[in-house]
Amino acid sequence: MLDGSRLALSFDPESILLRLGASGHDGLLQIANDTPDADLASLKQQLSMHLPRLSVDENWSPTVVLAEAQRLAARLHALRRDHRPVLLPPSELPLLQSAQVEQIEPAVAATVFDRYHYLLSHRWDSFSVGLHFGPRACWPFIVASLSPFDLANMADGLPTLEGPGTLTVLSRLFAFPGAPRNSVSYFLGQLRSYLTRTRPELGFLVTYVNPNVGFHGASYRADNWQVLGYETGTSYCYVDQDYRTDRQLAQEYGTADPEALSCTLGRRFRRSCHNLKPLLVLARSLHNQPNAPGAPSVFPRWSPT
Image 1 (cartoon, rainbow, N blue to C red):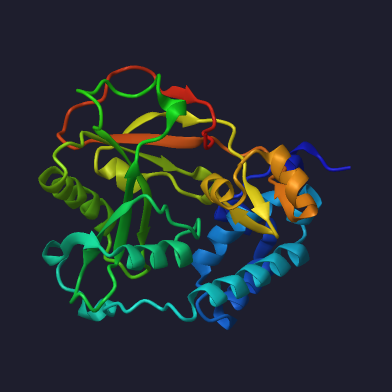
Image 2 (cartoon, rainbow, N blue to C red):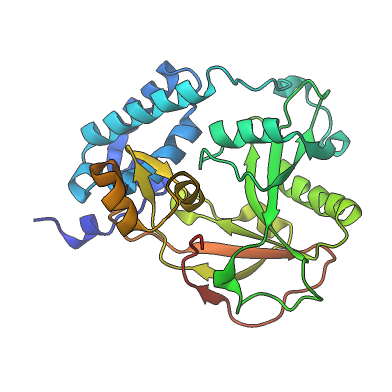
C-alpha cells in the first residue's frame, strides 16, 4: 500500500526529477541529447503536462516515466524538424535595448506556439507581437499573443474598468532558449508601450500562470503585474495520449465536456487523474492604474460555451 507522501503528487519539473532520482535524471538527459529538437527544458515541460494522466505507481516508476519521455521527445522532433527557428547566436545578440518590438505574422506566431510553446497550440483569434534581435529574416526571440477577453468565469472578480472593450488576454508567451537574461520582463514593458500606441482602446491585460509546469510568474511580477486570484478545478484532457486544450476540443469535436467526449472517443479520451494546483491569474494596467484593492478572488474553472 502506498503511503500518503506518495499519493499527493506534484508535476512541476523539479518534483518529477526528485521522483526519478539521479539515474532517472541521467536517462532523461540522455533522451534529450539523443533526440534532435527535444531540448531538456521542453521535454520536462511536456512531462509536466502528460504525467498527470498516469497512475501514482506509474509516476513513481522511472521505467514508465522514461518511456513516456521517449514518446514525447519523438513527438517534439516530429513537430519541429521542419520548422527549426532561424535565430541569431547568443554571441551576436545586440544590446537588449536595441531589440525591436513589432507585430508578428500570424503564420510565424502559429508555428512558434504549435511547436515550441508548452501547450503546443495557438489561439486562432489572436494577434501576436514579438521581440526581434536581428533582421526580419530571423525569428523573434520572444513572442506573445493577445486574444479577445472571453473569460466569463472571472466576471465578478475583475478590476473596475471604464467601458467595454478594454480587456484583452495575454494568451501565449514564449521565449526561445538563449534569449538574454531579463528579456521577458523587458519585453512585457515594451509590449505595454506598443499596445498603448497601437491599441489605445485597451486598458488591462489578463493572463494565466500554471504552477503545475513550474511557472511562478517571476517575469510578470518584475513588470508589476498584480494577482487577481486563482482559477480552481485545474484538469487536463488527452486524446490519443496527447494533451488538448479545451478550445482545441471544442473546435475539433464541438464540445469540451468530458462525459460527451468520453462517449464519442471511448478509450482514446482520458482526463488527468490527480489533484492539480490552481492556476494563478494576473493582471496589468496598460496605463499604470492600480487594480482594485482586495483579497485575491477564487474563480471556477473556465470552459468554452
